Image (cartoon, rainbow over the protein chains, first blue to last red):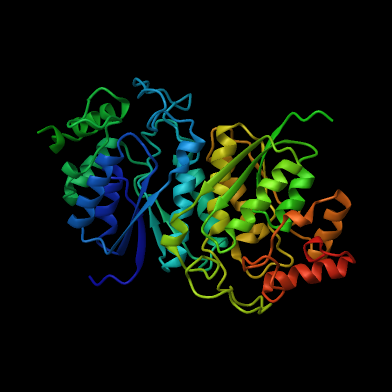
Length: 221
Length: 221
């Protein structure tokens, strides 16, 4: 199939956005956007980003440094702010890893890039079903943001596509394996060691996802 | 009056945001946010920002560097991209000074700061009436963005206040003069010389505003 339309993809280097990349790359010419917001695991994530872009022949890569997240602060995901928290799996309280309005900021930059390069779609790997309590990962947020992006841009026709929003981690793994996603080029752990720690909340979610889907995580082979 | 609530103000150093500052400073403890996006006039604007914050006893100043605007490009307002355009005063076409989704990006960062510091309000000096065709300066955009900010944050109660939205430049000047705004600490010109050029679209709008309101611009004295 000849690809005509352009799309932006927010590609962190985690397994969710890698799965979305596999889906979007079949239909669209892609501009991949990666954000360095001085999260602890940026080095790992950036390496995965480059590997994934190469694997999927991404047309254009844009890496954006968001140094100001450190100025705003307020999240244990950022380097130099406390320790990686222990797993909680509670949905009644927003966890300390919440980075204030991170998806709002990333989507607004993606919207600017889409407006600049006349791209029709913005893909992102937000997940609501398994979400760990982040308010900016919800359908309600994404839909309202999309309305603002439509009326606030030159092109007036930007759509935000979040195809994993209602999937569980194991459904994402199943879908990704079928699409041939190279999960060895993804990083989920909140720490930045050679191998995943298998103790943080993000590792445990990933473990459970592969386990329930009946596959082995290539990172653990 | 004792100030209890906190508010964020987007303070560029132009006359609109200075007028909003005068209004907001009467009721709220303010965090002033200034963005350096490598616009031609940043040096002038930053100087105005500091003068205005001092004049109004702003509690906290945050200056955020948005280096990535240059990576995205697409506006003649940015340094190194073409010349400052000649005045057009046409509303049927978006002008070359449009910076893709600039207000969207700035508002999303302001939302993060508001969420982090538990501020209830975000003030901005967007003007629709005299607007030069920027899609992200319209009521429709601001209202939709506010909805996204409400549902996408921890605090869930952020309101965006744009008190100049329906005013003309001369109405803004009248209001500001009554409030005692020190307009000598504001900069509107698209160029960055000692004195305003009085030839660019922004200068002509300001000239007309002071003229119609019946006041002299202190910058021209």
